[in-house]
Length: 315
Image 1 (tube, rainbow, N blue to C red):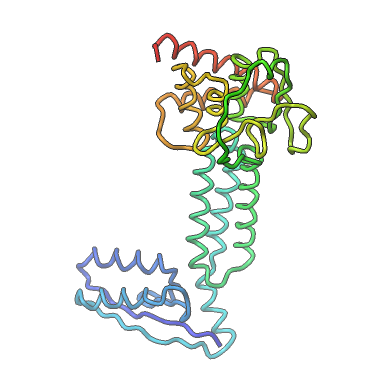
Image 2 (cartoon, rainbow, N blue to C red; image 1 turned 45 degrees about the vertical axis):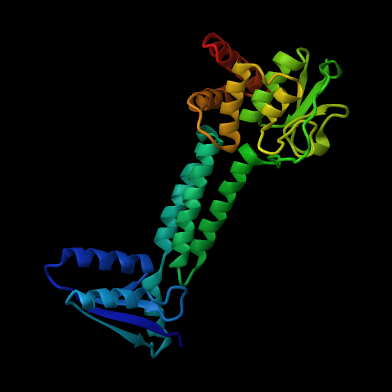
């Protein structure tokens, strides 16, 4: 038969601060409430000192507190105590938040979507720590969170390139004329900016191929922004920055300004004032576009405008 630890307490009537601190500590520890003033926790759990700390604080403040061992004598009593720790409703509320986030992922953009998922993951982990008798509700919440993460990967991070450590070298632009340039489908900031840079400054007659897996890349195509691609992340620089440097374009202040925004939106780092506006415009383009080619066409105009604005400002 399982054992439990109980805390019997009586708080000073006028000490509302102590009452609030004790209530918060007991709630965060995941205590079950048998009745007013009688709190219960499983005897063996990761944090064995929660009730002891509350007991000490109450006694030092002039209240009454005593820890006791609680041993159910029957399966019925055990079941009654275990019901005090039923987290189904809390997992259900978390599940609804997860489901409500799914349709918003594409609108949030990669950074905000990732932040939303991390927040939900932290909530799930915190709830799991006090779900001492986990059941089907936790399984469902975990499955929904996993599905949300998968949807994020499909939208933004699927096949996201790992930074290479190879040495950057200058390229002869003449070898990259009238080429097919291939990258992952459902392009986002770095891929869209890189495609714009290619079309405007490297290969004006470039055609683009979007693939789901690298094995689907057209033979002879120039790859960019995926693991093993000719142009991809190198050390701390994203693909846009690598392309600009490889073709001697990184001395252009306007391109450098765009590169800083793209870098921040793709991998984080130093905040850039215009990054939020760029992300918002691209997110709107993505909502309207029916295909990757249509999205790039809209993105081309957006980056043209940013480039023109930076040029006028003399950046």
